[in-house]
Amino acid sequence: MYIILVYDVGEKRVGKMLKLCRRYLSWIQNSVLEGELTEVQLKQLKAEAKDIMHKGDSLIIFSSRNERWLEKEVIGEEKASTDQFL
Image 1 (cartoon, rainbow, N blue to C red):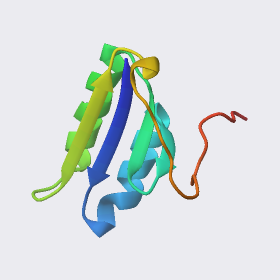
Image 2: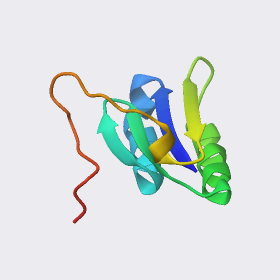
Image 3: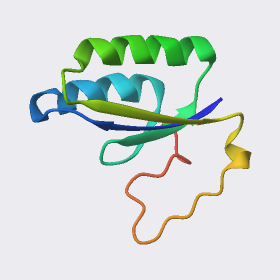
C-alpha cells in the first residue's frame, strides 16, 4: 500500500522519529514521508513510532492501495524527489 506519513513530535524526538521513518519511507519534506509499505511493515513502523512518542505528539498516516490513485502536485520547490535512488 502507498503511505503518506506526517509526524509532529517534541523537538528532542524529531531526529529519532525521522531516522525511524526513513528506514521505511522516503523523506519528501519536513516531517513528511511517503512510500510503499506492506501491512506488516506498517504495523512495525507504528509500533516503533509509539515507543518514541510522548503525550502531545502525533503521527498521521494516509494510505492508498497504490500511488497511482493519488494526484500529487508540488507548488514551489520540491525539497526531496523520490525518483532518485542511490
